[in-house]
Length: 198
Image (cartoon, rainbow, N blue to C red; front, side, top):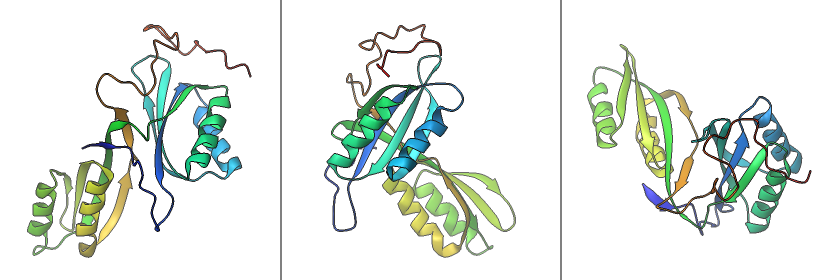
């Protein structure tokens, strides 16, 4: 699903959500330091996903953070101060491709199994485990798609669910973080560190 990254979604139900990506060094302790910064500052993380980037030695983190623009500015400033963080970008005003993966274990009976499988097929989800009393369904898509399938399955009895959190990438030729402009060559490894002045 191609969509704006939650731009202008503030409502009476709560603050708007912003999508932030951070390029960080891929080494032990980085995630702990980032999480500690959020805890100390009292920032709420709606979701967090982290994994290797296209460059060896560097990882990308995708945060979904609740808050107004001033809060988001504080989040990005504080992230940028961390020694292991190379660059931070708020992509909330960009057009992005956003995805989330979820595994949902649903209680089944002989009479309900067919209906549950039809729901999975309707959402292009996969059945990845079958037992006499349950199914495990794998779904990939935008947050609303995952939420919709969860809502349909909940009356049958969801015994377990795990969601990865959102990962997002800016559409087209534009880049959320331009490694070339940061002076990071294609052969970058974990030893490269931009001078942050800290």
